[in-house]
Length: 358
Image 1 (cartoon, rainbow, N blue to C red):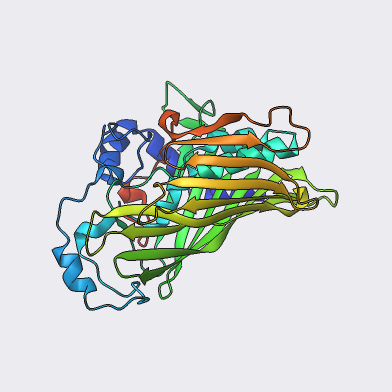
Image 2 (image 1 turned 90 degrees about the horizontal axis):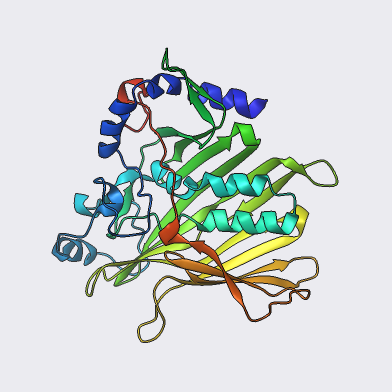
């Protein structure tokens, strides 16, 4: 299978890393894996999501005072305290830490239930982010990052040799394919599930006065090769990201928000999901609220409504004509109960010359 051979070539050295789990444990403390919980009290290791703003805004104010609204921030050199420990290449892996939901979707035969599981998977990891307002490091042109996940119930280890046989592993590789404008291209696959994710992130930074915006252009495509349409083509989902905002740059408290719209579309199923990530107004509103609809694009019928908060609890309401529960909602995803699976990175001496050294 093409997926299997490609992933084997990308991370052929990963098996030697498995034989030294204790070394990886100490290495992971200095790497930038995301936390496994939405609970702020979970601080078992020093990672980028545990960082808080411990410096004032005077440096930012003096720097930003030279800018004008609408200015492009991609060419601005930021002070180190506002930078994440992750580059954009690694930052994408935050969204891939619930493979259990993706596998569940791939094994679901009902098309609407499968689509809803894809929606749940794509919205399950937005809560994995630094507590402080941080900007990912800009990768240099040609820089790349690789990692993998040993999925539950998919790996066996020989007690005599220590060799690992991975029958269910996920792989990820990303490369910076353009520096100005910055473009990060990535590939993710679970060969045993016969699925892949291909995407490109093109962030466009803008100064908006007391806020900055990262307009997240680009697109992600999820392909499920086990699910074919009537013409024998695999099922493809097209996904976009919400935009990111840093509020309170000049005055007030620094605050990170997701805003605007996230969309998920599957043409072969005639299904679409459009979720609005609502930003708080000056007087009314609340932080981190979402409101979205799943609809049949052929009949334009609204099937489900998704509400709640993207970093806390999201709820699902059945709006379909045949629903007998018109006024009730069910829990769609609970970030507080989530157990994200952290990626594993090969040891530095096994990485390439232009690979991210974390």
